[in-house]
Image (cartoon, rainbow, N blue to C red):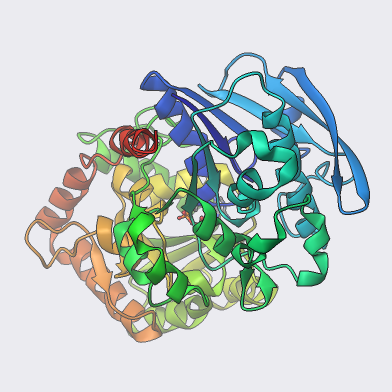
Length: 472
Ligand code: ADP
């Protein structure tokens, strides 16, 4: 099959979170299964662009409202990532360093989607499926069906994957004219609560909708930032496919971003060497259990609870654990987490910012990884933690619920708690300290057992292929 993935992120070209990891891995595994997988994304000005070789494959122009724009499409020459990678450039809109966060993100991603549809409509053949990811590509299922300029594409099946339903890309109706001319009877397919809503539109128009875990699929019917009824209504064409992890990138045996490689047999020594490196860098005590958090500092991840939960844990458990945070997001929270370094010197430290290399070292050198998320569609961090022998401490929600069991249950290998609250986190920290200090056999069994759990993409990649084939 020929599959075209369209997305705003793709690791290692540009990544802000799990979406990038998924779009960087799924196509590679689909290609390994013998299919032609292509990724199309905006041409941001990231390091990857300047350090690789490209060829120009298409140039074109289209209208966005009254604005005519030129675009070009380049292709990575060497198939370095294991799939065909295409970047779309639009001067003045996509030629930026960051992926998101600009005032004109609406215009940027609208123009990107128009360019992608225009380019594919110029092909001499048609792909078997267009697979769109998250709201930045949510207009495509509508555009291929109902925009006159792309009528040639109307028969191509579209699949839409929701990696996060909190962000929907809302646009006010006064910008309706940005969309290329379409069958105006169909305007309702763009609308949700008097706003143009690309995520809702994709759920209505795509042939199939997937999300990244079964539990999240269920939860969206009760909590989806206003779209609950839509998910209930479209249940029949929706399914959950749990993300995998790229086991070539995330492998403690070969990872060159950590200081000591290790496997299941050498886990204890290997992790201790990495932990000592972290402890040295951040002024922590390698003999105490190290509990870390890696992620976006936003409400969804319950990052706002961290300052209080960490202070309480340090007081209540008499400083028997150390904490380290890597994250960026809400500026006020960033400040607080940074300031706390001085108050809890020797017990707590943080790195505010995005640092891929440090994240690898933390998965390898931590004893526990904390994820108190309020919402977690799939979550990749806990799967990386498993692979690196780091015990996940997770709230029972979404993909965390589907991948982690509590050590109190039969063959359990993690720590689970029910509420995103300071109390639940503090209590779980107590359980972690007890496990680390008083239950060495169980602790070491959990570590080596979790490293054997297979969360590779092989199974999920095939599930997507089966889904595409069902649309033929
Ligand atoms: P989300 O996509 O909601 O942010 P996921 O758990 O699906 O959450 O994916 C998060 C990914 O982003 C993981 O690969 C994680 O290691 C990475 N990540 C998040 N924040 C940072 C950071 N500050 N520095 C490095 N990597 C980060």
